[in-house]
Length: 285
Length: 189
Ligand code: SF4
Ligand code: SF4
Image 1 (cartoon, chains in turn blue, purple):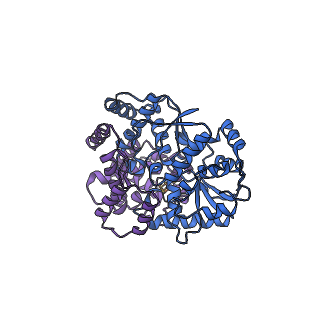
Image 2 (cartoon, rainbow over the protein chains, first blue to last red):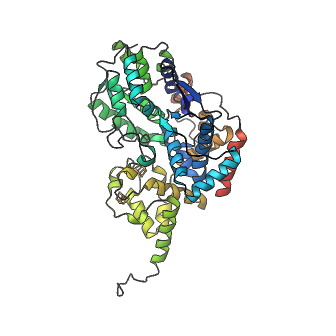
Image 3 (tube, each protein chain N blue to C red):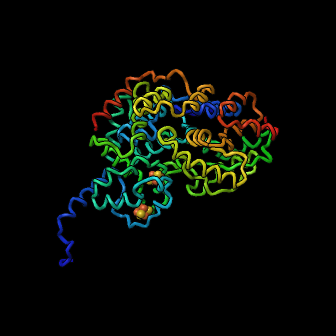
């Protein structure tokens, strides 16, 4: 199976662990990831905070390129996913502003966005029944006894009209996936709380306050690990804990562990808070 | 209503036109807000901000541009959209806040919070140069602009060692297209 793939800037750098584990898991499932040719940065929060035009035009170039390539688009970075889907929604609603941006970007890129692209988050892609069944059948090392809390974060499902693929207040898809891998999914009510997003550099104090609370709650819920599908959540929890006690894994890293894939060191060694001792003690690596 | 002191009071005209302007620019039905404060109850930066989320909306209705544009809340908003998800009237306050941030930047006045806008600027400058974010370059720009050279040095080194920060930037091949998009963006301002 072949799908279009938009890794975004993070998966090539601060979230290289997410990128490597995603590629390895997809390879083992025979899913071919075809990168959007010559993609650019989506602009993320800095774009919509400073320029309405760039916030739409930058992601639009990617959507046009992806649509030209013809495959459904899978996006692992939650920030990029959010921006792609919001831009898709904006263009599809066809306001006069949307028509204008689309026309202008078309003069630069050579083609308009038709709005035909199907854009899925990687978690949504893996949650499709047939893919989830396949995942389940491939588990050789069930994550039995591993206590995890699924951390969805804020950008994955909000604003719901444009981006949600799960209940935006009580999401279940990450829970279900982790359950399929054999992990013990602990209930907690902080699934959708914000980690401080893009403030890690300019206002580490705010990110610190928010992550300390999240980690405290994860611990209260009895978790060994937090599990996420977002590079920003991962980076903030991984780097802004004063006692560096709670590792946070990408869900793809746990899939790789459950599949018993070779080469897991390549991504696990990249974490600031090393998850390997806990994974080793559970005989998973 | 004829006898009301408010009826026909022209002082409310500017407020009305400001509200309409913000409604149009943000595509949010600001005038529907009835101050239930559900937005404020879920806002993660409520303790640090000088205005509550519901107050932003109220001040837009009142046309109090001075307090709005001078508020640090604009910059502290994380765009987490908890307010949007909970508002019974379908108002996305963060979209309103994006419009207000744009007004501050356009006015040339100093934003009420320095670091966050400098970070955004450094991020966008980096994307303009190479088409993709080059973290190390962006961090360098940001540190120059805010003179925060020593902050997070240790963490930076750890990230470099782990290959989570790259020494060299990635470039979009068709950089001319990205540059042209940025040029159009500047024209719009
Ligand atoms: S939740 Fe909506 S209606 Fe309630 S105060 Fe906030 S903006 Fe107003
Ligand atoms: S989007 Fe901004 S205003 Fe709304 S809840 Fe989040 S931080 Fe608060």
